[in-house]
Length: 442
Ligand SMILES: Cc1cc2nc3c(=O)[nH]c(=O)nc-3n(C[C@H](O)[C@H](O)[C@H](O)COP(=O)(O)OP(=O)(O)OC[C@H]3O[C@@H](n4cnc5c(N)ncnc54)[C@H](O)[C@@H]3O)c2cc1C
Image 1: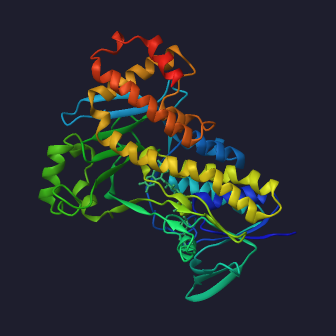
Image 2 (image 1 turned 45 degrees about the vertical axis):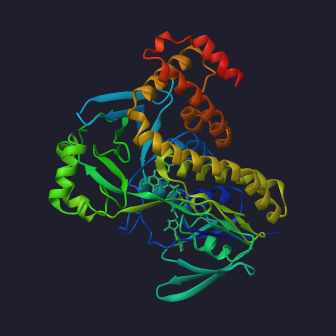
């Protein structure tokens, strides 16, 4: 049977999915709300840069594009913590430099995927098509295009239209559909550390910078032009919040007091703070992800996560990778979609939970002496016992470990190690062999 396939959303997930399906010989129509980002300046959307790690790289490898993408990435080997007094503490991410994450441009990556997608004669890209509604039973999508309503019917439609998915909203009508979208009380705002001169970096370029401050934090990822994109994760309301920090005096006084070393780094602070938008941070947990064999949600549309593990895109690429064998093994795609959802959902839930947990760890825990000792202890374990994997390492560098296993095993490990590090001021006092054995026995 020649299946007709529509994909809604030519973001990161939709573009990669189109490439996977085209490689398998299907003809695909991709509909994207925005104008073609390669030709028009379109609103950048969320976050200018992203951390790409092993799961995402594996997804890109299958499309044959990982090498090209990584050429435009900046490796980040660890976290650089900035104290209120300007002291810097460097904490490596992995056992050695081979374990690192990569700062990449969101639009650069999306453009690379769109260019590759367009090179397939069986992928047809339709920009400026904003999905307005769907007829689930008939498999019809209705778009607004140049002021007119146009429709497209397909045997199968993939909903890769992001966290605010119109397709997910249509599925919500079913009494058996469970939708648990939850927003954090924090939002985010992006600020810029410009390059020095012609592309020099003002801070260590091969690190993800963090200013942990208890209930909020600032982070910064490097860009190829020598700039850093900072993201302030901050309460939406309350004493120190986006709601209360408004005037140049308030903003200046707050940054001078809480992030003093950024005053020099972010010359346009007041203007950017007053004009850059506040983004929402939410977790989407819904189920089932499919409607018969007609619609399937993937990526953020199915399981948006908060960005604190740097895994939303990585997990979405992993979705595409894991879906393919189900489609190949099953002639009946309703069954394939159902089996894929059953298998993938526990892992999507796990990374959603891990991401929220990591928010508390990053904004608060990373600055605690016991946490820093725990990372030291883990470095010793990693050096002595190559099969020891930290929670961060399982999530970020080991795609063969499902997220659900990383969550369960990683949290148990961390609870044990943190308790030890709270008791010992010096990690060298700790009996490494015993710790390793204890962890092995669970
Ligand atoms: C601040 C922040 C930082 C992040 N950092 C990281 C990180 O470091 N690492 C990481 O792995 N992940 C990160 N993420 C998560 C990552 O951005 C998402 O997981 C990823 O973008 C999901 O891709 P997607 O294609 O599923 O959705 P999206 O990127 O949202 O793409 C959806 C596409 O669908 C289109 N669309 C939407 N509605 C319609 C419609 N009605 N009709 C037609 N088209 C439509 C959109 O225009 C868009 O092109 C971050 C997220 C945020 C908010």
